[in-house]
Image 1 (cartoon, rainbow, N blue to C red):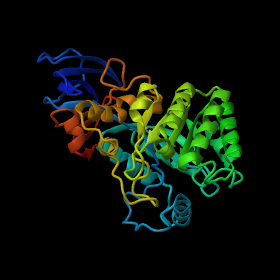
Image 2: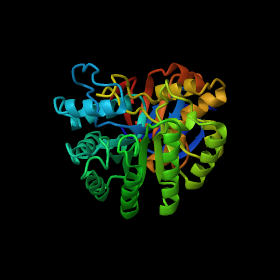
Image 3: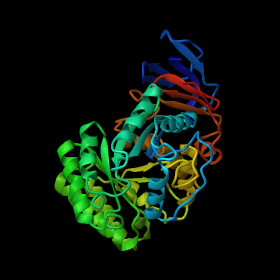
Length: 397
């Protein structure tokens, strides 16, 4: 169903409004009126529900999930290296990656109101670029209802696996929006070589760069410095993201503030899944410096963890709890991180309930944004690109 107007909704919990849609974009948000505009197309009665922009999952791994298969027990060693080894040993048995698995996860995203995602897709000597092909097929099956941006990701390491740099280069040449790295010190044991190789590809191909960094304390801080230096040297300001970066919340204040100033200078952004056992990020200090923060689900029901359901409101709630958010202002800010504030992670200049933004809306039966966050009720309606794609928890595609 293509929508021309969504009537009587409360954008971000404010006054009742009508959202006028022209094709895939919002043309106007104006005070609610009983009069029908002469726009043609379908009208949706919003029934006074809370309206939010579609959620943005800034850090996902949709190629890894066994969603839709019989339950897979957790196994392997509970370390980063152990999880990698277990996944490599078991993924073939589960026929991962597959377009069916990625489609199942993207449908869960839609069910919960996510209309855009930045997903890492494994590129390694075992699967080559097959995972990227599977994720693209999944996105096509859903008619682009979820805007999927792909980062080619070397989960198994870079320098310790000769040939992976060539695969990342091939992925970038074939249209991946970015390439990734992982623990240049902790996994590859050669941080200079990994970062030199990754930045060379990013410069040559004009793509973004995302480093998954789990290393803690000063080892993590040392790699922060290497990433900052290379970003500035390569002129890649605004195109580099650090994912996880647990060390940042563990550093003494003077060291942390020094690094934050340098991150801001380099235009480096942050993606977090807000895991409960980690140190909180200095998110207010980051926001004050204009350092972008995106929230994501990470893996969902995969060989790393049985947890996850694709609900970005749940991730935002975890972020709020981890960071001690209590006020309405802070709770609303957590939801914004999962929606409007995440637009740079999916290369959108604007992602909000505003003129010119994509026509991505989520309607929720909630009193206000904090109420929606703490209860995470079922999404009453999800509109993606001007089309109704989910209603009362049922995906319509």
